[in-house]
Image 1 (cartoon, rainbow, N blue to C red):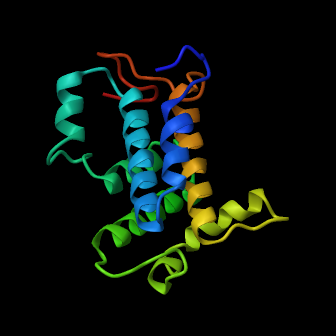
Image 2 (image 1 turned 180 degrees about the horizontal axis):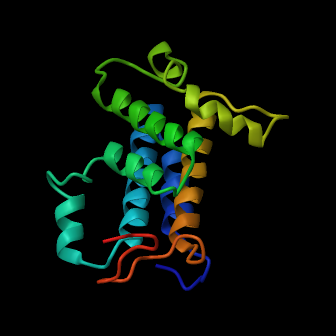
Length: 171
């Protein structure tokens, strides 16, 4: 790919390309990237048992869906209620674009009514609130940053060791 140590395919290729796409494509692609990174974050934080991970996270496994992964991350304390709701809103907007067979954009009522959980993002830029497409992009980037932080923060979010009970577990 690149010899640049700061090269990141999501930041350097996927996000810039997605931002050039029509609203429907943008929503579906960015949600897919968020879903992929969330799944990777969760898999990085469980016991390293490839067979069990594959069974749980693929096909008909209980953690194969975006929704189940969103809820698991919340239940494990990897993020709070605002991000939990934001991730579900990303999923719902993605599903709306994927399944509504009519022209839609980020100003369509069916989309704007699903964007409520994105509003907390505007608290990070109060002088220039974001709307519609720009808000969706920022929300997805925000969630990508959150999943990266959890995935790489070994001090706060340690991976369990095979054969050992989690801290605080009793028999």
